[in-house]
Image (cartoon, rainbow, N blue to C red; front, side):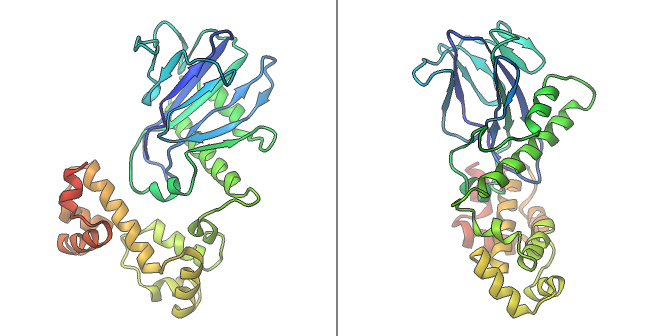
Length: 294
């Protein structure tokens, strides 16, 4: 997962309030979202949801309004000249702005981990994903708004789970749109045969899977599984498994000091040599070279 893009906020003539929640631990549904919700002056929810990654973007009350603040990864806020605003615009727990009763409330949820495992999902999404309130009303938004300013014991765990649920809900809604170009692996999750095989591979990629073993678990023949898996996902089962193992290895190589031998065993290879051969074939560089360029 990667940090959300650095947004600029603009609201020189209106009251506004920003509430931040950051997801800093690994998620079973990784991504790089920044989800926000607007609230009208009357307080009635207008759950507009957006997901953005990498590309800088502007949130404003008007399209031609000049930016007045820059929000960086981790919710760091500053003026355009770099002056910190954390204290002067602080409005309480995970909240900042120019008025606590502002007519516009922006909820920002950020995944702050970079990684290769999430790339498959990110590559299937646009840089900016927007679900207007008139298209989708998400019951999680009011709950997130209520929880984001609380500082009770275990609150970070609560926010982590809410952000995960919100991400899943947004992705589901996005791919369910008429004409949505959902990736094959996502659609295949709904297939009774291939979906079962995918969940087995994702749940334990280090297991010594074979097509025969997957077919037995899915209740079909080896040939039937191989044919249907390739048809729906776009690649054979073992090629898919190799890709997921290499993704996990790539994250472990850069995110930990674990030896290549230990990484190999964690992701399902019998030795460092076996991992190196597969890694080089898939990515064009050795595990050591990949780690060195991190």
